[in-house]
Length: 112
Length: 114
Image (cartoon, rainbow over all chains, first blue to last red; front, top):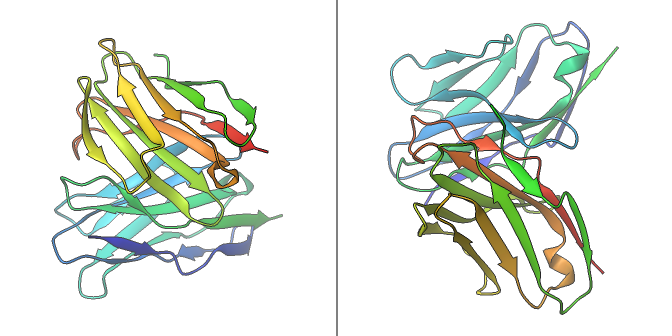
């Protein structure tokens, strides 16, 4: 079975500052990792995913995440945040033939 | 193309009642998954249906059930509602349900049990 820990439930950050949202996972088998974003009163949207290959994956809106197998982490980063990045972010893991297991989410608040 | 549609968006029910939620996936998608989202527990997987068959099931009591129709539309039913069933119920559809097919989420149905 897999599990996901998002270490920070809330992260406030000033606009144009960098941010890192932390995600650690636990699994006895190989995993595939995802970050989803949820805006207020919306469903989840896929932000980026790691399936194989390069351990650094990027999204179209400037976010990136790096898969670190030795540290069992998949932290999400952005060098400069915008007000529009205010949302809740969920890290998720699967072994491939099991449903996605989500972390409890990190609420990112960008302050003008 | 139209996204995943969940109806109704909001529901208020009384303890002991039952409720049915509906999910219309994106046209052509055959996999539908259901999740319960609460502030305390986060997102928890309920079940997945593929081509009218339940393919995976989460760790929820038998009061939670679902089905999928031939047009891939899915319903989930909760019987004998409890206060703790108050949550946002999210449906996700994908083409095949595998890793390389992205799951698209609906806006959810917010259920309040009083």
